[in-house]
Length: 428
Image (cartoon, rainbow, N blue to C red; front, side, top):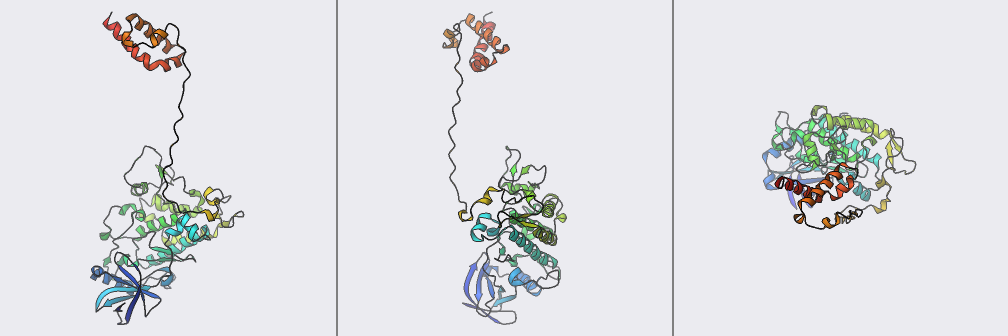
């Protein structure tokens, strides 16, 4: 139990530890049960971090409609500063109900285990809500920077909450920039791959790439949009293929790509056509022209329309599919027809033994009587005359219809033929 004060000198008492990370520890608060306190480790209590949080506390984001975002649902935004004996120590933020991160939602096996009633319709709603939340942030000039599968939480009623907000990129009214120093390569656009993120200014266009990756994983059974199989089986690359594809601007779902989607990925055309178009804009055109990447608002509108166009399967009521399809694509997928009670989290498996090769036998070859005495002899013991007749037989086999005979005896005759030529040259 420790005592801190807010900027207004209100006493805050920390109680139970809820969790810890690389920068600090999160505690429950005695005076405010609906809030928690993040207390930084001493080495993390920098003047820059204090200034950044002051800006965030003073300027919470608003939605495009003009109303404030519901912090308790949409975002764990800093609410007040905390001081220890007059020195910066941390901040207060909304207490978020215990919810899984979005990885446990878009991963099909984990979703079926923990949220068996959640279907494709719910995933569309989650995707739309995430886009709406990010649109509110962008509308107020904030950039997340580090969009990834761990800083988005999803509740049972498909509401999303952004966490780890103190890593967001912030700019004060005077134009001073507070960078987002972290990032996950899988969600980082190609132009920032390999760049020192702590010294580069992020833009909304960078966020648009990370957002689209998460949305793709939500709607495509957890498959990363740049996971693929090279068309050329001899192709090799250092590291993961999806990172190579991001850096090289290769979108496997684009016609003519050097990579094709993995076999376990759902078909791209199962997505609503409007949603397909936005993914192509982001991952095909947008890889080279970042400003063409769809905005969060465009995603929210397209996903809302796609959600309206979902049709319930008559055979399996838990299946929902896009109205532009003639039949339920989930029913066509073998994985989706398994009983839900049998879903198991995949674990490392031993490599299956390779079946022994079936020996190949050739029909026995009946040699002419005149060749039998020679066949089992070493060619070093053959006379020049015998070599002449063997060489003549080889030529006859090659130019005759009995080419199979030539093939079967070929290796032996080739050696003998060479000796025959040598014998002619050496013994004219």
